[in-house]
Image (cartoon, one colour):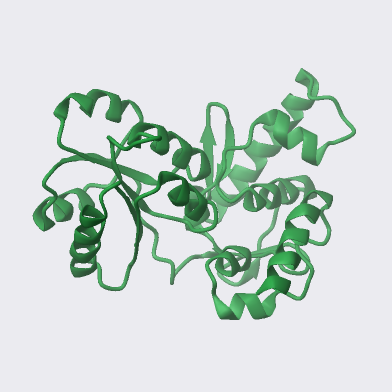
Length: 266
């Protein structure tokens, strides 16, 4: 599992890291005392779970949870606090759980056994995504068959957004940039989204796409993606990037430029 712990007290962060390492010694457990640093990390690392202190200066755990869910809609939010009156507000955000302080190893084990979104085994993902060079998708190492090219381009855009919920206006502006975002175009988009979802359902990968009231997103933790592994610092993925990223799609040019700049600095 990839977990983050955010608490303004470093002693709490360090204690929870030790407890989580005992429970999950092969996982990655990162701690932060600054919510803004946690958000920066979440923009480049796919976290399964976020343990958030509710009462923090500058940004509360409730506010931080909302920001994290925009980045990754399937992140498990677990609030930690010493005050039970926050419980109703916490569960309005569909939190996985709520732990009263002091946090103990037994409490952590219980909450980890009842997560809203089950972490997916990173070593056994059926859907593999190649972003470096031209964009391609594989299922069980065979090329994914999309009903039409626009479905594949839409999936590429969602991959580029790394789990952020994309509204119809955002998608139309990037995939049909010469068309107005009117009702006719939004109807075409809905058909494209439905066909893309059906294509993944056909291969038993329904969990790859997340549909929300305000848009659609990719479940970033459900795919093996060279771009995501590059962001995580995977040396093999960094060797695979030779300057080209989703070369057939214009919307990918900004990400390609950013990768090139980061690669030169590295």
